[in-house]
Image (spheres, rainbow over the protein chains, first blue to last red):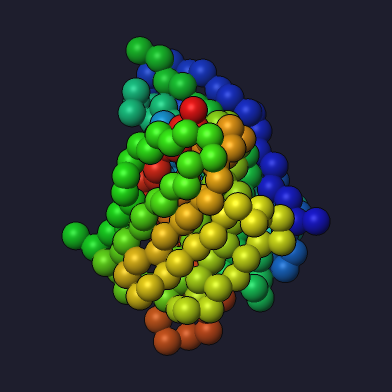
Length: 113
Length: 119
Protein backbone atom coordinates (compact mmCIF):
# COMPACT_ATOMS: atom_id res chain seq x y z
CA UNK A 1 0.00 0.00 0.00
CA UNK A 2 1.31 3.45 -0.87
CA UNK A 3 2.20 5.40 2.24
CA UNK A 4 3.65 8.74 3.22
CA UNK A 5 5.06 9.12 6.71
CA UNK A 6 6.13 12.40 8.26
CA UNK A 7 8.23 13.23 11.25
CA UNK A 8 8.17 14.68 13.75
CA UNK A 9 4.43 14.72 14.39
CA UNK A 10 4.80 18.08 16.10
CA UNK A 11 7.59 20.56 16.60
CA UNK A 12 8.00 23.69 18.71
CA UNK A 13 10.75 26.18 17.91
CA UNK A 14 11.63 29.75 18.78
CA UNK A 15 11.16 32.54 16.31
CA UNK A 16 14.23 33.06 14.15
CA UNK A 17 15.43 29.46 14.43
CA UNK A 18 15.70 27.02 11.54
CA UNK A 19 14.00 23.65 11.40
CA UNK A 20 13.76 20.61 9.14
CA UNK A 21 10.73 18.41 8.60
CA UNK A 22 11.01 14.89 7.21
CA UNK A 23 8.91 12.88 4.80
CA UNK A 24 9.42 9.22 3.84
CA UNK A 25 7.27 7.58 1.22
CA UNK A 26 6.73 4.18 -0.33
CA UNK A 27 4.66 5.38 -3.27
CA UNK A 28 5.79 3.68 -6.47
CA UNK A 29 5.82 4.52 -9.26
CA UNK A 30 6.37 8.10 -8.29
CA UNK A 31 5.44 11.22 -10.21
CA UNK A 32 6.05 14.16 -7.93
CA UNK A 33 6.18 15.27 -4.33
CA UNK A 34 4.65 18.40 -2.89
CA UNK A 35 4.89 20.19 0.39
CA UNK A 36 1.78 22.04 1.50
CA UNK A 37 1.29 24.49 4.34
CA UNK A 38 -2.07 24.33 6.05
CA UNK A 39 -2.99 27.07 8.49
CA UNK A 40 -5.53 26.15 11.14
CA UNK A 41 -9.02 26.17 9.67
CA UNK A 42 -7.79 26.79 6.12
CA UNK A 43 -7.17 24.72 3.03
CA UNK A 44 -3.65 23.54 2.14
CA UNK A 45 -1.48 25.90 0.10
CA UNK A 46 1.29 24.54 -2.11
CA UNK A 47 4.85 25.50 -1.13
CA UNK A 48 7.00 23.40 -3.46
CA UNK A 49 6.62 20.66 -6.00
CA UNK A 50 9.41 18.37 -7.22
CA UNK A 51 9.54 15.64 -9.82
CA UNK A 52 11.76 12.60 -9.40
CA UNK A 53 14.57 14.29 -11.33
CA UNK A 54 14.74 17.31 -9.04
CA UNK A 55 16.85 17.30 -5.87
CA UNK A 56 15.95 20.63 -4.39
CA UNK A 57 13.40 23.41 -4.77
CA UNK A 58 13.18 26.69 -2.91
CA UNK A 59 10.33 29.07 -2.20
CA UNK A 60 11.54 31.99 -0.14
CA UNK A 61 12.55 30.70 3.27
CA UNK A 62 11.31 27.21 2.43
CA UNK A 63 13.69 24.72 0.80
CA UNK A 64 12.60 21.21 -0.07
CA UNK A 65 14.96 18.38 -0.93
CA UNK A 66 14.23 15.05 -2.52
CA UNK A 67 16.17 11.80 -2.66
CA UNK A 68 14.21 9.57 -5.01
CA UNK A 69 16.58 6.64 -4.39
CA UNK A 70 15.91 6.50 -0.66
CA UNK A 71 12.36 7.88 -1.08
CA UNK A 72 12.96 10.68 1.37
CA UNK A 73 12.18 14.37 1.30
CA UNK A 74 12.77 17.18 3.73
CA UNK A 75 11.44 20.69 4.13
CA UNK A 76 13.84 23.19 5.66
CA UNK A 77 12.51 26.45 7.06
CA UNK A 78 15.02 29.19 7.58
CA UNK A 79 14.70 32.04 10.08
CA UNK A 80 11.27 30.97 11.23
CA UNK A 81 8.50 33.50 11.79
CA UNK A 82 5.39 33.36 13.94
CA UNK A 83 3.33 33.05 10.75
CA UNK A 84 5.10 29.78 9.95
CA UNK A 85 3.02 28.13 12.67
CA UNK A 86 0.92 25.65 10.71
CA UNK A 87 0.67 22.04 9.65
CA UNK A 88 3.09 21.03 6.90
CA UNK A 89 1.86 18.20 4.75
CA UNK A 90 3.92 16.07 2.40
CA UNK A 91 1.90 14.82 -0.56
CA UNK A 92 3.05 12.32 -3.17
CA UNK A 93 1.48 11.86 -6.57
CA UNK A 94 1.70 8.32 -7.90
CA UNK A 95 2.85 7.86 -11.46
CA UNK A 96 0.24 6.73 -13.93
CA UNK A 97 -3.03 7.44 -12.14
CA UNK A 98 -1.94 10.89 -11.14
CA UNK A 99 -5.28 12.37 -10.25
CA UNK A 100 -5.13 10.95 -6.75
CA UNK A 101 -2.65 12.01 -4.10
CA UNK A 102 -1.20 10.22 -1.11
CA UNK A 103 -1.09 12.52 1.90
CA UNK A 104 1.11 12.38 4.95
CA UNK A 105 -0.46 13.16 8.31
CA UNK A 106 1.50 16.37 8.57
CA UNK A 107 3.90 17.97 11.02
CA UNK A 108 2.37 20.56 13.30
CA UNK A 109 4.88 23.38 13.66
CA UNK A 110 4.54 25.96 16.41
CA UNK A 111 6.81 29.00 16.38
CA UNK A 112 7.04 30.81 19.69
CA UNK A 113 8.18 34.41 20.20
CA UNK B 1 -8.60 36.47 -8.88
CA UNK B 2 -9.02 32.92 -10.05
CA UNK B 3 -9.65 30.69 -7.10
CA UNK B 4 -11.51 27.87 -5.41
CA UNK B 5 -14.38 29.09 -3.25
CA UNK B 6 -16.23 27.13 -0.62
CA UNK B 7 -19.47 28.09 1.03
CA UNK B 8 -20.29 28.25 3.76
CA UNK B 9 -17.01 28.40 5.69
CA UNK B 10 -18.75 27.07 8.79
CA UNK B 11 -21.84 24.86 8.79
CA UNK B 12 -23.75 23.59 11.79
CA UNK B 13 -26.36 20.90 11.33
CA UNK B 14 -28.32 18.52 13.49
CA UNK B 15 -27.86 14.81 13.66
CA UNK B 16 -29.68 13.27 10.69
CA UNK B 17 -30.53 16.58 9.02
CA UNK B 18 -29.34 16.73 5.39
CA UNK B 19 -26.73 19.30 4.56
CA UNK B 20 -25.16 20.52 1.32
CA UNK B 21 -21.70 22.05 1.00
CA UNK B 22 -20.80 24.11 -2.03
CA UNK B 23 -17.63 24.56 -4.05
CA UNK B 24 -17.05 26.78 -7.02
CA UNK B 25 -13.98 27.48 -9.11
CA UNK B 26 -12.96 30.14 -11.57
CA UNK B 27 -9.94 28.16 -12.76
CA UNK B 28 -11.85 26.19 -15.42
CA UNK B 29 -10.19 22.98 -14.24
CA UNK B 30 -11.41 19.62 -15.44
CA UNK B 31 -11.15 17.81 -12.15
CA UNK B 32 -12.83 18.63 -8.84
CA UNK B 33 -12.32 16.73 -5.62
CA UNK B 34 -13.96 16.48 -2.23
CA UNK B 35 -11.86 15.58 0.80
CA UNK B 36 -12.78 14.98 4.41
CA UNK B 37 -10.21 16.04 6.98
CA UNK B 38 -10.61 15.26 10.65
CA UNK B 39 -8.56 16.90 13.36
CA UNK B 40 -4.82 16.19 13.12
CA UNK B 41 -5.35 13.79 10.23
CA UNK B 42 -4.48 13.89 6.57
CA UNK B 43 -7.24 14.77 4.11
CA UNK B 44 -9.15 11.70 2.93
CA UNK B 45 -10.43 11.65 -0.62
CA UNK B 46 -14.18 11.02 -0.82
CA UNK B 47 -14.70 11.29 -4.60
CA UNK B 48 -13.73 13.30 -7.62
CA UNK B 49 -15.18 14.38 -10.94
CA UNK B 50 -13.22 14.33 -14.16
CA UNK B 51 -15.48 16.62 -16.17
CA UNK B 52 -18.83 14.86 -15.70
CA UNK B 53 -17.28 11.49 -14.94
CA UNK B 54 -17.90 10.70 -11.26
CA UNK B 55 -15.33 8.59 -9.38
CA UNK B 56 -16.23 7.34 -5.94
CA UNK B 57 -13.64 6.04 -3.49
CA UNK B 58 -14.38 2.48 -2.41
CA UNK B 59 -14.65 3.35 1.27
CA UNK B 60 -16.74 6.50 0.92
CA UNK B 61 -20.01 5.93 2.82
CA UNK B 62 -23.26 5.96 0.86
CA UNK B 63 -24.31 8.82 3.10
CA UNK B 64 -22.10 11.08 0.99
CA UNK B 65 -23.21 12.11 -2.47
CA UNK B 66 -21.94 14.66 -4.94
CA UNK B 67 -23.25 16.67 -7.86
CA UNK B 68 -21.45 18.64 -10.52
CA UNK B 69 -23.99 20.54 -12.60
CA UNK B 70 -21.34 22.37 -14.61
CA UNK B 71 -17.58 22.92 -14.78
CA UNK B 72 -17.60 25.63 -12.14
CA UNK B 73 -19.68 24.09 -9.37
CA UNK B 74 -19.53 20.94 -7.31
CA UNK B 75 -21.71 20.06 -4.31
CA UNK B 76 -21.26 17.65 -1.45
CA UNK B 77 -24.51 16.30 -0.03
CA UNK B 78 -24.55 14.52 3.31
CA UNK B 79 -27.92 12.82 3.50
CA UNK B 80 -28.03 11.95 7.19
CA UNK B 81 -25.07 13.44 9.04
CA UNK B 82 -23.81 11.56 12.04
CA UNK B 83 -21.57 12.81 14.82
CA UNK B 84 -18.65 11.09 13.12
CA UNK B 85 -19.12 13.24 10.02
CA UNK B 86 -18.04 16.39 11.84
CA UNK B 87 -14.89 17.45 10.03
CA UNK B 88 -13.34 19.96 7.68
CA UNK B 89 -14.43 19.35 4.10
CA UNK B 90 -11.98 20.48 1.47
CA UNK B 91 -12.70 21.03 -2.19
CA UNK B 92 -9.86 20.98 -4.69
CA UNK B 93 -9.44 21.35 -8.42
CA UNK B 94 -6.66 20.22 -10.68
CA UNK B 95 -5.12 20.53 -14.09
CA UNK B 96 -2.00 19.20 -15.76
CA UNK B 97 1.13 21.15 -14.80
CA UNK B 98 2.02 21.43 -18.45
CA UNK B 99 -1.11 22.14 -20.47
CA UNK B 100 -1.56 20.02 -23.55
CA UNK B 101 0.55 17.09 -22.36
CA UNK B 102 -0.54 13.89 -20.70
CA UNK B 103 -1.84 14.52 -17.20
CA UNK B 104 1.10 13.00 -15.32
CA UNK B 105 1.47 15.92 -12.95
CA UNK B 106 -1.87 17.16 -11.74
CA UNK B 107 -1.38 20.13 -9.48
CA UNK B 108 -4.24 20.46 -7.02
CA UNK B 109 -5.56 23.78 -5.76
CA UNK B 110 -7.49 23.70 -2.53
CA UNK B 111 -10.33 25.84 -1.30
CA UNK B 112 -10.38 27.21 2.25
CA UNK B 113 -12.61 24.42 3.50
CA UNK B 114 -15.97 24.17 5.24
CA UNK B 115 -15.94 23.25 8.90
CA UNK B 116 -18.98 21.03 9.59
CA UNK B 117 -20.32 20.66 13.11
CA UNK B 118 -23.00 18.05 13.85
CA UNK B 119 -25.07 18.58 16.97
